[in-house]
Length: 405
Image 1 (cartoon, one colour):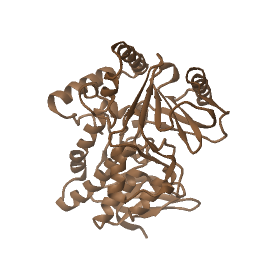
Image 2: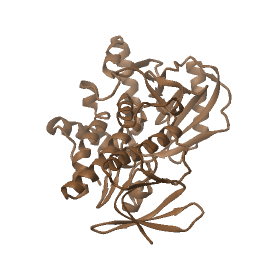
Image 3: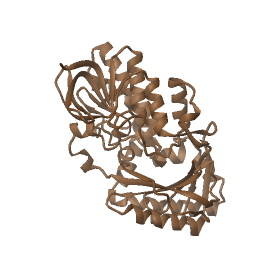
């Protein structure tokens, strides 16, 4: 017999927890499918933005210590440049939590009070005007089907739900590999209260480091196809030579995953089709410096709210969702908008203030360094698109929806 429910959410993520909380609170029978056994591992720096912290506390309650890494908090971000200039910025409102995603995600999922099927893989879906038929498989078992009114894909940047709707999507956008290794520390002058990021074209598209649980992370990001171990070795050597970061050889545990960095820069989000909604990083939401938890939480909540509103008002859920999600698009894409960066405060740390505190000569050097780093992305031809979006935002106060899927 095929079971019938109101909503199926794929992926036991923070976006899923936020969506499930809205749905369960509205009295809708909600099931979360998760392919791994919970609590499951999740590659992530764990540095949460102030906005994300507020959301977690307001919706799920006080954060227990068991869901935090050591150090428990992060004070802000430090940018480093080829000229050896550095720029540190504190978060507005003070330090924020350093989440251990394996336990934080599971805690939020449990706080949503939704039903969870872990070790259960999403296989496919089909939909008509009234329902979606989801096919899934329990680990070691046969496939089964669930009939549901709506589906939410909250299953990350390589989302199988998204792929079931748009099979060629991931071939049409740049995908990057991000990986991190962990080192015991010999000597590390980098302030452990900050998340450190390098605007350095020789180091790759995304390079970071911070302290976690008594070890130092060395993280690298680059186009899919390059060699992780070679890139990591080069970055670790640079840290030693230029910053005096002396680390023991990397421990045997290391991790990596594919990421979709492009959609939030160029307003190329994907929100679903028919009764299937895509949310979180699967949609393309990613804040500058790669923090995706806050926009995952907010976009997930909006997905859940959109289903509730669509049912109450007897409206098409895509119409409701796309109207509501426009606020999160503005907030996220503004972070990549040069005009907003220069003349507003789209981030939760004050970059313009930190920049202006430098001597004029250093400001020019730093801006030159940023320009050389940005040219690393020239091959993706994003420059004109970002410039056009900046003017669009200035003139109409919003970003057009015509490029959304």
